[in-house]
Length: 128
Image (cartoon, rainbow, N blue to C red; front, side):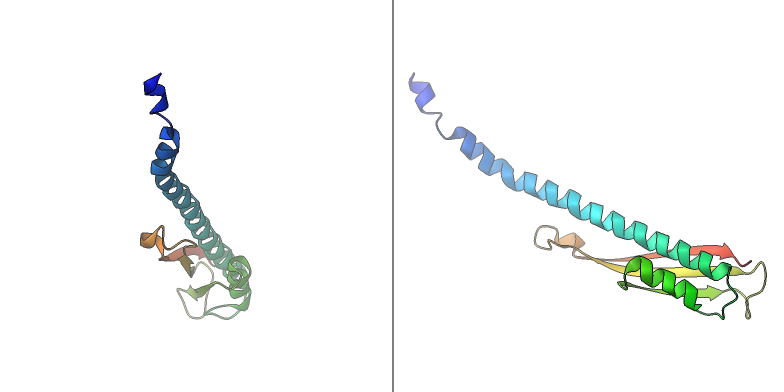
């Protein structure tokens, strides 16, 4: 009976010791998921811009339709450039779209190594 009395508060102490680790893992999962989403958005914006530039007859560099796709996908949070391998852009030339986005973590105190990441994606397509 005496051993049972001395065990009071043990589970509270264990919880207090494990809680910081669990919080760190949870915040790390959430922030890495947000970074992965930002990477996928940058990839999509680069592909969409390259495709829009490859099928239009707009002047290079930075055709308006391609730049509009980058702005609409990234909601104005990133920058991009669209170039053509020839000047003026001719059939079978290479159109390249480059998108850059800065990812900022929501909890910099827990994850200082991810406070800001510069994400850059490039897509290349053939001009039609």
